[in-house]
Amino acid sequence: MRALAVDDDPLILEVLKNNFDEMGIKSLECAESGSVALAILKKSPTPFDVILLDIEMPGMDGIEVCRKIRMIPEYNSTPVLMVTTVTNEDSVREAFTAGATDYVCKPVKPLDLAARIQSVTHLLRERRRAESNFEAAQSLKAQIEQDMKLTREKGLKVDFVPNMIDKLEMENYILQLSRLQISRTQVYAFGIKEFNEIYDRTTAFDLYYTIGDVASALQSCFSSEKSLLSYCGAGRFVVVSRESERENRYNIAQIVQKAVNELELVYNNGSPCKVTMVTGEPVQASFWSMGSSLRLIERALNALDTARGGHDTYTETRKYKSLLRECLDVA
Image (cartoon, one colour):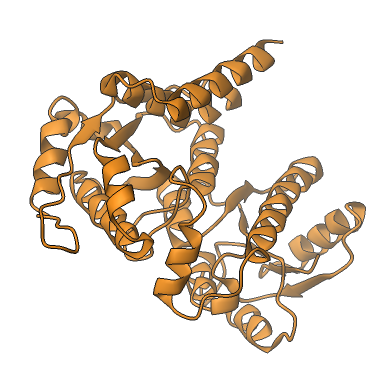
């Protein structure tokens, strides 16, 4: 594994080197500024496998560096860990919005860092395995068609929707809110009732943009900028927002449906594409424990299933897995 650590403090870089040595990872390159890091990434003949970024750095801060890294084609999905003393909620949200994969607070604990590195290494391995199953796409449409051939339950991230992150990043974001003991957070789940029909009647390319349009409509329903959204597959979306959205809590279903109706979606043949949104009861984030935090998305999706009143195989399988995880936690 090749890693790049970016921090303006030489002492922190030395600590990270020692931590990586203890993990048996010898290939760690260091940069003391964002501009130097970007130059290293662009000149390196072999891409780095993971990047560690401080936030508070002179000149270009880590969040801006992360945005620029995501603009480099070779690094649009490379795991990026923010390693920083910055713990305010706005910075956490902005980091994940910029493309961060995880967030580690200083002082760095070797065991914690090792666990995070192991997690992103697993993510990297799974991505490489997926990439090996088909040739690189020659265009955006070809890439989308290939990605969407897997299953209708597959989650995805739509590039043109602001504040949209993938499910793993959302789980890490919720965990970070838990570590910072930030309360007053609501988790909402929304579903497209006609998703199976839409999936069967559209190409993967058109489905990608339909999901993106619905995601944009959902995002517009939350006035606060402190909200992030993920698409979890099977026509399901999760929005994590502050409790300050309380005024919309009791009529959010109507607000969302109105926003989606205004899209006036159609199929390729010009016929109307009906999209009925189902809204689950919002879940309050109490953050009593890491385990309960990890289950917030699952609880929100379960609330959505209750609102749908559905008993499809996918729903039942997911509920079974959720119940099994809770039993293992108790054990």
